[in-house]
Length: 257
Image: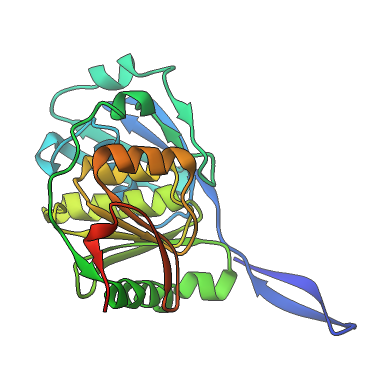
C-alpha cells in the first residue's frame, strides 16, 4: 500500500509517498472447520494453505486435497480434504506460538522431532555456489527492495533457484514454497532451502519433513535449530553474505573452492 509520510534526511524534512508491506490475517478452514489464522502477505494464499498443511503432516500429497478455494476479500482459504477433518479437530488447542514474525503457529512437538530418523542423503555443494544462491535470492527480492518489510525464501538445486517467494513471515514464505512443490509434484529430497530470515526450530522442522538436507540463510540459527540439525543430519549455513558463511552442522556437505 502507499502512504504519505514525513521523511527526515540530513536535517531536511520532506513529504513523500512510501510503499508499505501489506499484512493481513488469513484463516484456513478444513472441511468447514476453522483450523488456524495466519498473519501474512496476501499473495499465493492457496500455496500458503497447502504448504502449511503439508508442514503440519495433515496432508502428504496434492491427491489428499479434494478442492481449495481462496476468498481473499474475506481473508479465508477453504480446503476440502478427502479424508475428513479429524486430525484438525484432534489438534485443536495443541498449537505452539513460534518464534517467527507474524506470530506463526505450529501443531507439532519439537521434542517429538528429536526422535525422528536422521536424513541419509549425501548432497554436497561448493562454498562458492552457496554464496551464488544467496545472491540470486537477494536479486529476486523485489518486494523487499520496495518496502524493506518482508522475508524471502527459495527452493534451489546445486546450480540455481527453482521457486522463489516473499512474505512478512519467514515461515509463511517457506510454506508457500512447500505449497508450490506440492502443487507441482516436485521432489525435494535433493534440493536446498534458501532463506533471508533467522533459522529457528520451526523452519528446520519444515525442511526436515521434506527431507531437505541443506538450509542456507543470511541470518543466524537458534540453539534449538542447531540441536535439531545435529540430530537430523541436516547442514546449516548461516550469515551467508558475500563470500562469507558460517557452517554450524554437518560441515562435510559444503566443500571448499
